[in-house]
Image (cartoon, rainbow, N blue to C red):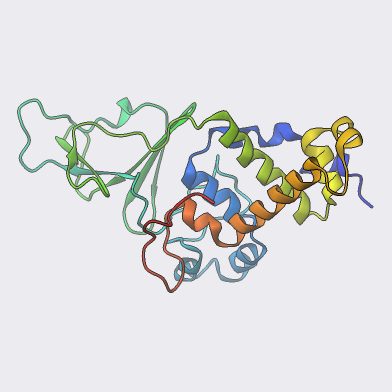
Length: 247
């Protein structure tokens, strides 16, 4: 048996980047762990249209975590800010200034148009750039669900409360551990330490129940729940309405 202390999932420090991810990035973290997605990637990555069953316009390499991946999700997330050339700008209209957008910028083509992601600590701005928009042009901001242009761009995500961020970290670490074949007790030792397990690990104890919940949550998010994070319609269903909540 492989010593869990030497397994890739054991050091919690390897998961600290999870604390700064927004919902779309978290959705990718769960999807990329799906064994069937990884198999489909190997078999069909030369056929872009086949990625749509997973909610993507294009395939993304599951070996890349959210810091390096650029998943092209199907449209629908109402927090993506759309940028258009303003056809009738006022005298004091804002202009599109690529280099003054705060954060580390990544510009990619998602199979339909240009997508811009700008990341800074605790924040992630995501934009869809309309064809013809150029640097220096007067720009209008629009966001799905708001029904009107915005005066200023809205951030894609603000820093999430620490308990919510820590929940995602623990969920992904527990998911990786179970995918690697770790027992619930080994998962608990990796997440909470051997001393806590030695003191509180009982058949009907709270610690054991907590680990079971994390494992169930991780599997549910990996096997379709990620679609709710990315606000993607499940196959064969319409858009999420009142049930479009985080699992």
